[in-house]
Image 1: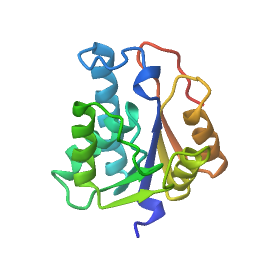
Image 2: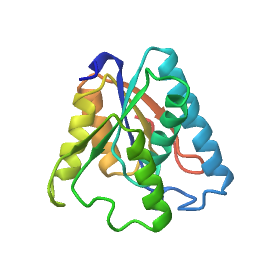
Image 3: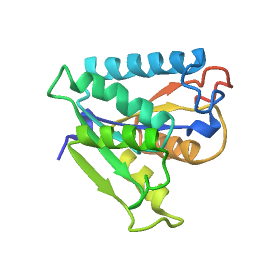
Length: 174
C-alpha cells in the first residue's frame, strides 16, 4: 500500500462545467493542461510518488494523463484509479472510452466503491481519495458540487491544497 505522505489525489470539474466543454482545441483547455502538468511535476519534485484519480470526465482525466507522462520516465511514480461504481464508463463515447481504458492500463491498482450507482458512491470515492493522501490538486471555480465538498473535506483533514483556477472562469480557490 502506498504511503499517505507521498500520495496525492485530484478533484476537479467535469467537462460540462468547464468553459470549453469538450473542445480540446481551445486555448483555455491547453492552458489548463499545461498548469496541471506543472503542478504534477512540482509534486513529484517535492517527493510525491502515488497519485489517485477519480476517473470522472474532464479534469480527472487531464490529471491522470499528466501523471502518465511522468510514469513513462519514472518507474517510481504510480497511478491509482478510484472508480465510484461498476459500469462508471459504460455510457462514454468511443473516444472517451479509449482514453479511460488507456488510463486504467497504467494504473497500479483500481478501487471500486459500489456495485451500481447510488447516492453515496461519489462521496465514498472522494473520501477515500482524501483519506489516502496528504495533498490534493484541484481545478475549481467556486461552483457548488462534488469538487467543493471534496476540497472542504480535504481542508478539514489537513491536506496540502494545490488549487488551479479554471481558465476563463472565476477563481474558486478556497
